[in-house]
Length: 302
Image (cartoon, rainbow, N blue to C red; front, side):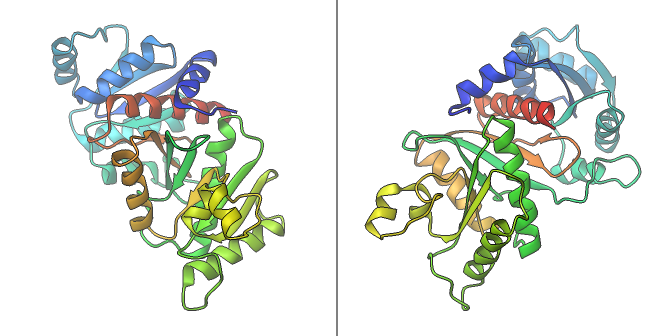
């Protein structure tokens, strides 16, 4: 079981090198992370985009990309299409967003003819190493789905469970978050959380997945809070996954972990045939590298 992001990097280095295709590779920070991941033998990069600009950036930051496969695509849609086709045809194992709008890339990912769509839902999973928590915590979905339905939440939970299992966890504990732990018909998040828990108990999730909800955040991550409130649960105080009711909750928790708690992170989009590394321009260089390593482990697991 991987308990830190350093362990994640080490695990990614131990496995077979994966091929990563970068859509619109002419981005300095992305290129730095890709080169470092390649030097660590985590990935073999395939650069798709404006190659002249990419080579100019490489020269400016003093990195060598001469040995990488490069494909010219000055138009962003073309870069996204080529990158997705490389994955769907088996020429690459997973894909990373470069200097391109997320919507452009995901439109190609979901293309009916050559894309990577499945019967699942695309969802964003963040992995955080928080100094005050005893293991990695996975947050979903604070980046893509605005107000997911009950069915959406089930798919989001299943996507996140795959991420946790890809990092070596046989048992996955999911806390379905709400403002309180009691079901209240006036609070839809509590009602849906209870339904998801019941679905898990009925065997609708894969083996090893344990779900409890509704749970307030304190109960999900603090054994002391659970003991004080007399709340008994296998998930309470030991949650792996925090499944949030809406994007505002996920976005707020995630940024609080980053900016208040100094958490290190990695992020990935799940629900496609291959993981999609989608990082923010505000993400640190380390977060981008961690995300590439995470994507490589998921690609190997899938």
